[in-house]
Image 1 (cartoon, rainbow, N blue to C red):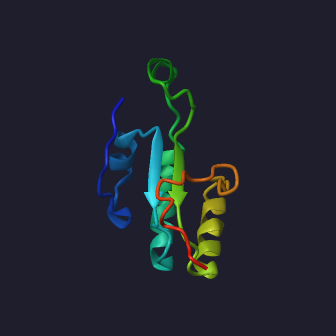
Image 2 (cartoon, helix red, strand yellow):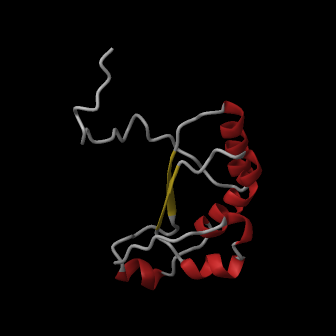
Length: 116
């Protein structure tokens, strides 16, 4: 298995470039903040997430999923921007799931607590 970290400008990413990536897992952190970028972001996610893995890839790799999955972490700074993202995701036939309650983060820095 391998991990790749790459700079992927959404507005200029070509479909052929995206299809060549063939990811199993997509990670994004704090990428939903500018409403004007959202259509390009969703286009990229849709292209990457709608790729079906060939059966041989699923058997050889430790990732048995038929399609890639994306995990995106975010802070909702503007509800309208987030709602726009969710609307575009729905239009692209992508599903979302809030993992906030089911996947609590590890408490790696316990001293970084609020003193309220």
